[in-house]
Length: 346
Image (cartoon, rainbow, N blue to C red; front, side):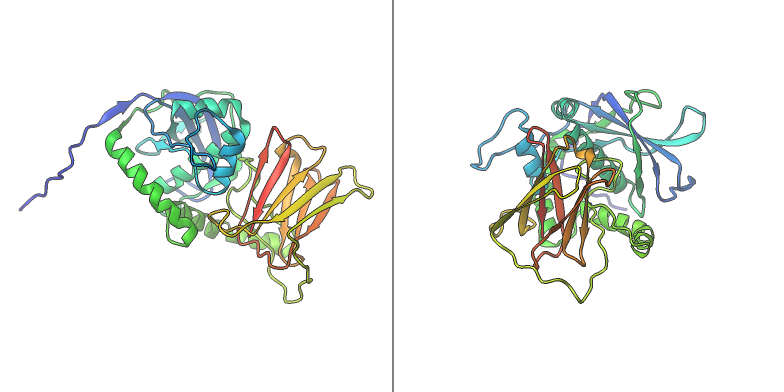
């Protein structure tokens, strides 16, 4: 019998994780001997040696520090994300009632955990990325229920987080390779994130079908709200008899009528290749509402309308979209300082 020795020298380094907050949810699909609905906890931790990813502005210059608007624009374009390490395996723990539950640790760089502590929107996005990372690590058809996410007032659960042993030099090289591969997402090639979303779409297909039959418009990407399904746009079935609407380069639409909330919406056509997904239009939505959780956005593919409302649905605005909008991808985020929702749509 012959053996092949790996040429690369492995230098494992043990990273001690500092816990910051806990994500509580449950599993949507069965996992090993655990039934669907079993509680699932994620200890979100940090370590200064977890890889970072540089941020560049429009001119290509490296940016130091946290620029919320730039960060969210880059995230919406798929050009930047926070590297996440997960502990080697999902392990068993007990909830506060003594029932069996599942647990895993996720770690990001110390710098990014500080950003999350000062910006709730980024924290919400990191929670979604952690869930994506765990689903990908578990493999198969493992899906976490994103409608059950909550944040207990604890820094960790199940004792101290597990230390992670990793070859940092090799990890940085792999990170660069994955960064190049991730660009292929927008060219239609397979990528871990795409596979995760595909699995989640399969698992949620029955639920979404039921919503459509009942005439309910499922929400689109929830502006960073971890209690919703992220990065998945579920639409109504198409209709052959669609209203014809002409697209202009830019238009502003305001509607008051008897509404309690006055929405102001502007739409502008984007230059080709402005975003990696080649979004066709950018919408800016503003109102008296002050937080992303106050908004509800839905896409009606039949009428080609973006339905904007407050969370209680007391004030609803149906914003007409151009005829060439397909809704194949809709990315949205809320800029806290500006109190504006940016929506990019194909």
